[in-house]
Image 1 (tube, one colour):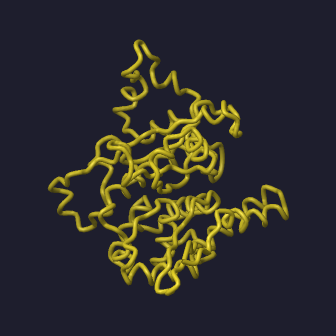
Image 2 (cartoon, helix red, strand yellow; image 1 turned 90 degrees about the vertical axis):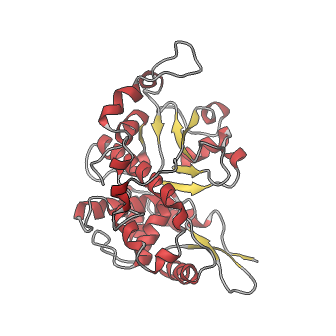
Image 3 (tube, one colour; image 1 turned 180 degrees about the vertical axis):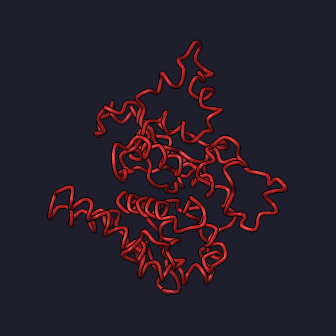
Length: 328
């Protein structure tokens, strides 16, 4: 097996440009460059025509699951490596196929969110949510044979979480296009995640294991959420450590636990308990982080959903009942 990937590769390819000119303008230029290289086009605010461009944006954010040995996967992976910033991890001696993907790269994830925001603003797709539209379109193209459809429920769950996070960051942003890697208040995130009729119930809930514990809105009033993309973990024990919680927050990465997670925990969203606290590697600072643990339950389709021609990708938020209906 020939290994072609180093964990430092992703940092180097953008960091060297920033080191040459350490200004805000240089940082913005880096993100715009990443947007263009990820989509393979300079005007990324218009509809992404190729399936490889759409899949590159979605995969860098959602960490989609593929059928590794299908012909559709092999051909699509080669195309995305050549033109959409996909990274080759290793190649066997036979060179018959390669292992590739999008590693947890903060700059590339920020760029992907910028592309999604631009597509939403331009109304390039039939629905207000460009992510949902692209997923629906990919199901009917060659990439549909590459994506593992058995994970569609989990994919929709990740999309809802990421959309709620984007809404929260945009709500708290002062002016202009927000920087999604800034993060947002945990309370604002929960407000955007749950429908209005459940806000009070969520914010005033108390812990089950502490007598006369504080309400959630009091205990976590200065807590901060930060995740711009998802990454998969194959070691559930390692995910539960304080170091993993700290690392996930610093990188801005929500961790996917399946298929090796404990029952009832599918996604780990990084939370810093005190926004103004440091993020260094000291033991006190590391222990000030935690995870918001989430489950993606198996959903039964109601009759109206079974008749939808765009299923399984366009699962509506209204059918789940707890989250905002403004986006889908």
